[in-house]
Length: 430
Image 1 (cartoon, one colour):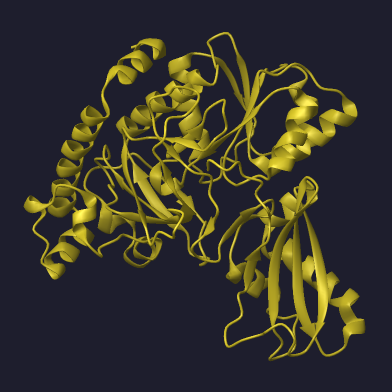
Image 2: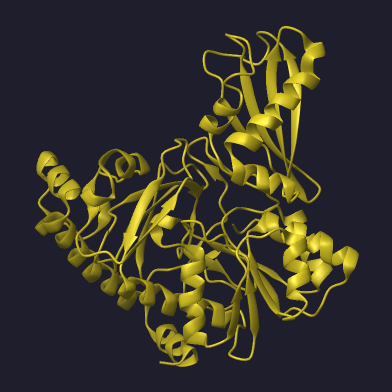
């Protein structure tokens, strides 16, 4: 079915029809998980949950699935069918990756859904796309490749190479649409501003947040809009996507049921999602650890799909930034043989202009030794975390070391190890 026709049919459906479809798909998914997944079967048995009586995820009470469950039990405990492929994510406070398994049928399903979203942004058969998404264990290249086959547009997959090399090699293709991570696109745009740009229809980014100041700078260089996707590897990367209004992410209600838990007075809380069309590794009430809200008010774009507000923060201390997906364990490893016993540290993520800045605050007995500490920090980063160092060499972020006297960082019993101070300049609606 052509995207135009599919969008028209979906737009004609009343909200009650979509909700009825969600509930039917949920009941099927819940029964599948309870029957074939050893994790869910045991959890439901232990909690006395009769899945035959459950009509909506919220009726499961205080039961949730977490990233820690995936790490502790392993992906195999969640399998309900034969897998064709797997992906990993290190978006966690632990160095151990989470694995998620999928089938080719599920890849095709997400590809069709993603193609509809990209069609709404203006992607057409005659367009030429260059993608710089990282192919190392990451799901995004597979999702967009599956979407492109339904749009049938020209597509070159560059991988996450150094932005200058991408720029020089892209000149031979003259793409009018570019895909990549936000911080990588910011750096590419700086190069294009200095060396010259070519006409773009739009840019598309995913994998991390971006300040509105940085987005505006990218759009000024290319004279084209930058749209954001919101997703997670566990969700197959297709939770929601911005429209041309950029007022939050239009959510994928065809493949998920979304909930918000622990809401504050403004309706912000942790996003919880349940997959509806997964036969290999369904997830029931998965805690995203992202703080946002559900927006049910109509969008000015007129699209039928409701929205997820822009992500405000993480429920844990993992931060997605120009350095990558980093948590306390990353900085603890970098500093493991640098600080004297008992010295505290804290990593603060800021944004100065168009680039993220990681300020590593460390306590020292001798404040005059800051230069030596900074040299050792950079050496450890280069030797122990090649991907994070590569992002630094690409100038996707800046790294600073700030010296503090012993005993000054900890104001209370617990010290927050990673602090995200970036100010996302959100429009009020999200």
